[in-house]
Amino acid sequence: ASQERLRPGFKSQRPHFNFLKQISYMDYRLRNLLISAILAGIVSGFLLISLPLYLAELGLDIGRIGFLFGVATLFYGILSYYLGAYSDYYGRLGIGVIFIFLLAVGTFLYGLLVFMPIALASVAFIISKVLSSASESVVGNIIKIRIADLSKKVSYGKNYGYLLFSIGL
Image 1 (cartoon, rainbow, N blue to C red):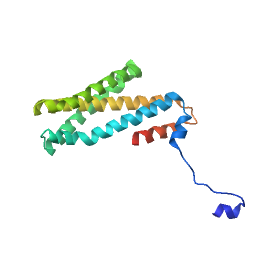
Image 2 (image 1 turned 60 degrees about the vertical axis):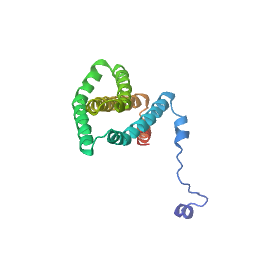
Image 3 (image 1 turned 30 degrees about the horizontal axis):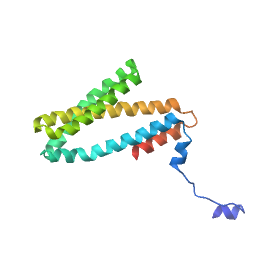
Image 4 (image 1 turned 90 degrees about the vertical axis):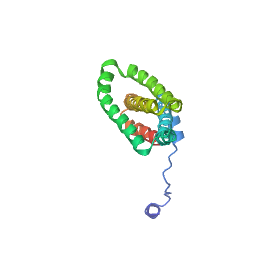
């Protein structure tokens, strides 16, 4: 309203952002990368919510569920220290393909927990949680590096913002 008084004929408009329109103008490789990040974020979100409930259905109490998540996080922390060095030495693509396969194996193990006795299910849960966490970390970092590779210097911030938007979605 104040701009209209200062400059006659000026119509102020609210900024309009249409994600689907913006994404249609992108390079197809970048667009496919962002769509993949959206789908991976949805799967990760479902697992984050459903895994404690799933373990409670198996008969584990809240203390044991917390212990299993803690042990899996500890193993993942130790493993992730070495993943960067292997990725630098062997190349991002080879490590990425291996860890996408390991993510599928870890997710498959989640589905088999129901058919296992509690002791074996606890060990299988730790293994599948470490595999899926490590895979999400490696693939997520590869996506960030790939966005940097595909982006021009001018649009890097915008494309990285799109990635953060798609992960947070």
